[in-house]
Length: 303
Figure 1: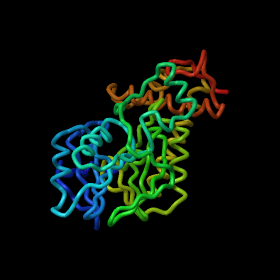
Figure 2: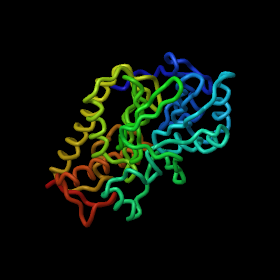
Figure 3: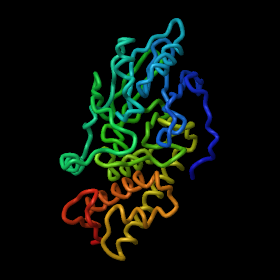
Figure 4: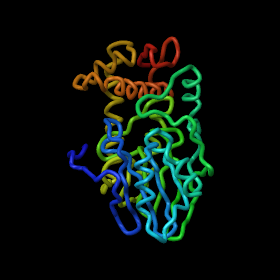
């Protein structure tokens, strides 16, 4: 259910998506970031920035240049602290005086099992972690913050990252990298947690939304259907893993080669992280066991 590759926005140029909402795409395209990180400017007069993006001087200049003569940035919201979303927060805050608001630092929101994996030496893969990120204001789940012409409610939605937050704006949601229309979200332990990912998607599915504005790609205009697809995609992958383990114990690397038979070699490491995320979730649910202990190189068996 990934849409055709027709999202081709101007880089560094503000585009109005709806009344009071503009998007600027950063110049950091990659296989992990698609066309680049979406930075959102919400409101008029007092403006909120959502996901300031990577530490690119040109992107900072684009954000500041998008402001009208009577506008100022009063709040900087960060969905999560991957290096394509949060590094520009501190310099933008220094330039504008606006506080940075997020769930917490880059270790906040981790489950106990992910804390143990991190302590054992496992590091995150994929997009890279902004290890020094620390917000000025730590937001609680359900907390509302208002500006002159906008109001957001912070929702803790871990899964893609432990400190991942989404921000509700009426019946719209700024969903960061939890839900994207162009690809399934990366879940890479210990920063990504598939147990939390499924719970966050199911919690969002229980509510009515008109549109999701994600961290990368075009607006998602059928968010319920997209959530259904993501949940089913993950359940199907889980079934593949369990079916493969029915033939005998295997490591995450071996399972990846068996399951991702058409994936380019350059993407197999990310695929292996996804498989390991599923195996951690299955171990937590006591569907599989790991020998000698839970790790990315363990031998997994179906229980």
